Image (cartoon, one colour):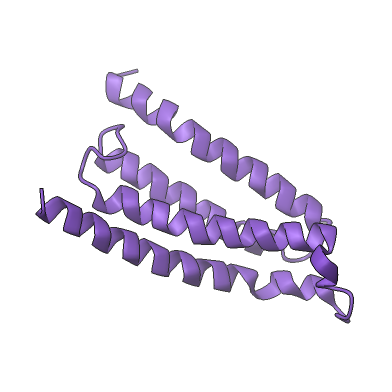
Length: 137
């Protein structure tokens, strides 16, 4: 294994482990409901973005500049954060959030669309900030 490949594997491992843990937890919270696979889509996109960022940087997060790393982080924070927060809120019925709902699990039907939209906006903001950082260096 070359030096770049070792860096790639070592630096991608925390992202993979976090995505796996979140995926198993999402499945547990949803009780293996019909929307589990749909809710894993933001995690898959996060893994693909992270892998592409490391590939472009030859095993380093900022090896090819700051646009992709900040864009990936900008995607991860709202996509993973919003999804994790709403799964947590559902799991513990945070402040009675789901008491009056007739079908509370329907939250997970459209959650991927919301998280992907928020992640896309976060990616765009991070990408623009990274571009501005590179031009002012």
